[in-house]
Length: 424
Image (cartoon, rainbow, N blue to C red):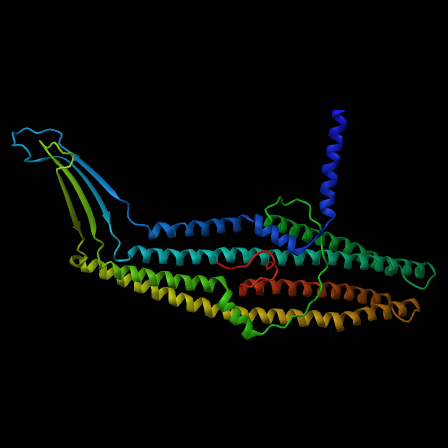
């Protein structure tokens, strides 16, 4: 009975794994799984949460200080109530200058900058998933192209063999077709290797074993998009993480400059002392209240240098913001051109080159079967058709990957809008 149960359990696991492999693989499911389980995203989130925890630390008051003094031994004679035997002191710094508030504002801005790094990690994962998914779908489509060409070559082999046996053709025609069929097997092996690489890439992005089974992705469908350069650039200025991070760094440096200026204003130290005389019967013989302040004006060089450092750091952050902004606008323009090129090339293949290649194959086949054309023209037309079909699919995959890259550049992903909003 135990053996039977174990066999049934093993079969269930095998069938379950096969069922997973047979399921259709959707892009949205892969994106959501990657965003949830990807270790790079988890690390970026943890770093952001760590930075948020610094804000309450920065705004907090200094710790209350308590001191106790007591006589350990006295080796001279003194009159009663002439000296203190015990002293209890409590001290508290009062942040009247607002330095703690400046530190908290700077810490908040730093947390905002790290949040943008977290957004960049998510955007990169989304872009890589979508690009890999497109290449995986393209791999399966290329396999279909190879299968169709294999069927076509088998038909050519049968036709050329029949013509050779009837004396209307040559043996070289059969051998050429058989050679092309063998080359197709090599191409199929390369395509399967590419599919395996993209499956491993998707599994790694989802933090799964590289060999974990994956379903078959949906076929790529060309969807034309009209992108406005002005709109995309405006969206980039608002949503791109690098720009928002640079702006947060400017804010942080402004608050640090504010903190440097406030160093001229000292925070007083309030202290309360309870003392007991040597012969007193009361618990507290005397209660003193005092206040002390540092004198930063006597160390002018130190604080002047600190202000200069903060100003230059702010200037550096502003220049980095300008450089990041200019670079991002250029990246948007180049990416839109890349998308437009891939789209126009795919449409050219789909609407003109591919129909012509198919017509050429049919015409060459008819001519060969009626002895008005040679087999070399037919096999050349078949090779051209295979190349054209493969190039059209490659252009479609490049188009989809380019759109994913554009969304990563602008910081406005569409694949994940249903799962969460990228907001602080």
